[in-house]
Image (tube, rainbow, N blue to C red; front, side, top):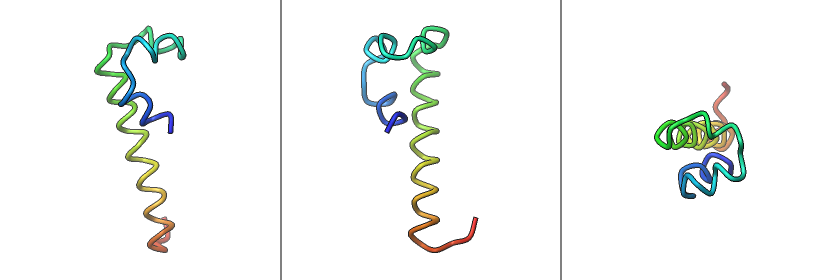
Length: 53
């Protein structure tokens, strides 16, 4: 959920909620959000398809 929030919400809104975001550019913050969301999707798919990690 946090990953998608970083992708969908405007940078200024995220910056007010997460102080560490101020040390990054908006593109870096969006990139981290995309990575987090894809990681979560991968974990869910492994479990759903019954594939051992």
